[in-house]
Amino acid sequence: MDQDTIAAISTPIGEGAIAIVRLSGEEAIKIANELFKGQDLREVKSHTIHYGKIVDPSTKEQVEEVMVSVMRAPKTFTTEDVVEINCHGGLASVNRLLELALLQGARLAEPGEFTKRAFLNGRIDLSQAEAVMDLIRAKTDKAMNVALKQLDGKLSQLVGSLRQQLIETVAHVEVNIDYPEYDDVEEMSNHMLIERTDAVYEEVEKLLKMAKQGKILREGLATAIIGRPNVGKSSLLNAFVQETKAIVTDIPGTTRDVIEEYVNIRGVPLRLVDTAGIRETEDIVERIGVERSRKALKEADLILFVLNYGEALSEEDKKLFEAVEGLECIVIINKTDLKQNLNIDEVKKYAGDKKIISTSLIKDKGMNELEEAIADTFFAGELDAGDLSYVSNVRHIQLLKQTLQALEDAKEAMEANMPIDLVQIDVTRAWELLGEIVGDTVQDSLIDQLFSQFCLGK
Ligand code: GDP
Ligand code: ZN
Image (cartoon, rainbow, N blue to C red; front, side, top):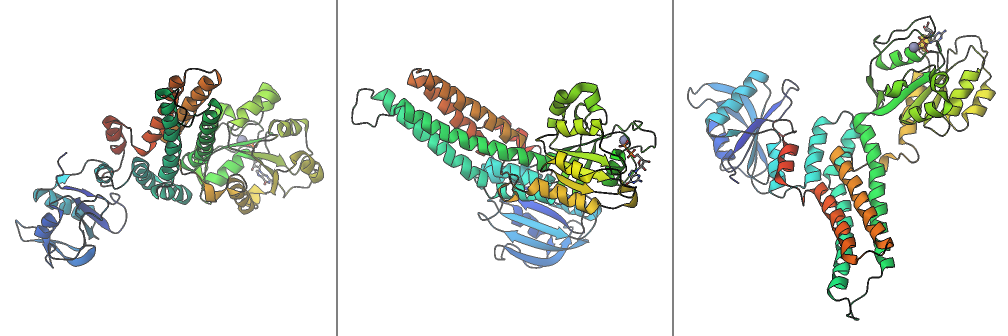
């Protein structure tokens, strides 16, 4: 493939005080030098930054004051010569700069082309490239950390070692096919094959579990607010979004909000969902019964169950407790400004090990504690921030699921004492699927499609 010199604005358009025009390719330094008044960039050391001015070569007019970084191949992001021109001007001047670079012979980069080059030149693997994309899009700090970890190549390492185990298994199988009667060759018994496949299976399962958390970070914790009419569900929703999109009324059951909100609670993105009508749901148990509402509620990652401090625990409340049993749920006792009619000991008995938080939404009390509880729930125990997913990408999750299926097929074939070469087909497929995660066995079209999702200039 031809490696012409590409250029693009690599900072978000219209944002930030500093804008960067990035060039990559053989001519990058030469092109920048033709626009630059200051030191001769062709002479400077690699990985140095230089102050100077950008001058339009055709009019000799000074365009911008800039800082220019010069990074020579191969120790650069793309492994090619890279120049970054930092200017503090607005959109117009950065556009002008880009235009001048193009006039000097650079080509406008396609979206994601810098990262694509890094991948094609072997600088990063596909999962790392995708991490760059996630970084660009990271909605919250925590999602950003996950993306950073992936960028470190953690996922690649894990996947690499799993592939190694599979390829060894395949090799053993191969030996058995080729030399079935050869005694010296270590005979891989069915039992051993199953054991090895199982080991990989478990690891892939673990990755998938982590992936679920990664997905939550990226897409938000699906959150349902439930409780009897008038306990303050809409008020809670409003407190979260801090703008009055949801309608709060005095008449029980008259809330008619149809929005889906996305709020950021201490780095945990909450998506207030309306899966099967479970957000802000008061009569779910009445309507569809405990068992079915349980099923619907299971679709939520987190349930916020609101009670009224001013009223005794009702039958409905008890049914709701039944429906949320064993699910991730925080109990909120709202309206603590009212005269107490709720028996807290009774609530504690029903709540079991669920967290209980008291609020008075009308008096703006308790939101801090609630937010803390949400953040804690998400990052405590099993949901450990330290181990948070290296896998946070839909494509990866898909591939991991397919890998599990292939391994399952292999196991079934072994257990049914199928011919060993049939088993081998499944194991090889699992190996290939894992390879697709790191880009070893992907087709070009997939690569193109992936990189076209990048922002321009990355
Ligand atoms: P929902 O039916 O569960 O969605 O309840 P709403 O959020 O619509 O609230 C019902 C009524 O309770 C409204 O008049 C709210 O202003 C009121 N309310 C909400 N939170 C509190 C609170 O902490 N204390 C008191 N006294 N009233 C509240
Ligand atoms: Zn409501």
